[in-house]
Length: 204
Image (cartoon, rainbow, N blue to C red):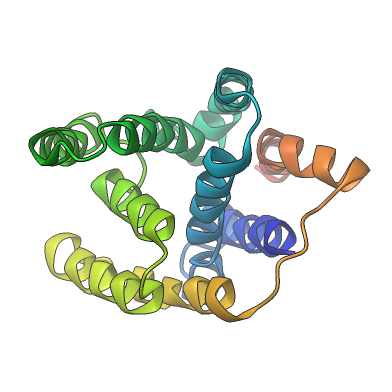
C-alpha cells in the first residue's frame, strides 16, 4: 500500500515541479513520497535475502533514471535513488559497527558531510530519516524534529508537511505489493521520468 502512495505522490510532486512550479499544493502532496521511499529502503535492508543484488538493482534504477532526471528538471546533481543507495550503504556500516560508539558517530558526521558536499537530494536529512525509521522509536516526533531542524537550517518550509508519511507508517497497515505490481513499482521511477520528459518535449 505504501508503495502505491509513494508512486502517486511522487508523480504529483514531479508534475508540479516540472510543469506547475508556482502551484505549491503539488509539492505539498509530494512531500509524502520521499519518507515513504526511505521507509521502503529500510524495509529492503531488513528483509532482502541478497544485499548485493538489492544494491545492484537500485544502482541500475538510479543509472537508468539519471538522464531523464537531468532532462526533466535541468539539474545535474544525482537523482534521489543515488541518495537512497548511499543511505543504504551507510545504514549497513552503521549497524554493523555494533557497539563501537566512536565509529557510529564517525559514520554519521562523515555521511552528513558527504551527502551535503556532493549535493545529493535531501542531503544529510535523508540519512537521518533512514536512522529514524530503522530504530522505529517515536518516529512521528523525531520526524517532526528533523523537519523543524531542516526548516531552520535550509528553509525547507514544504518539508514540514512530510510528517504525514510517518503517521501512515505508524498507524496504517501496509500489505506489500506482489506479482506484476511489484515489478511496476520497481521500474516506476525511470518510467515516469521518461514519460514526463516526453510530455515536456511535446508541449515546449
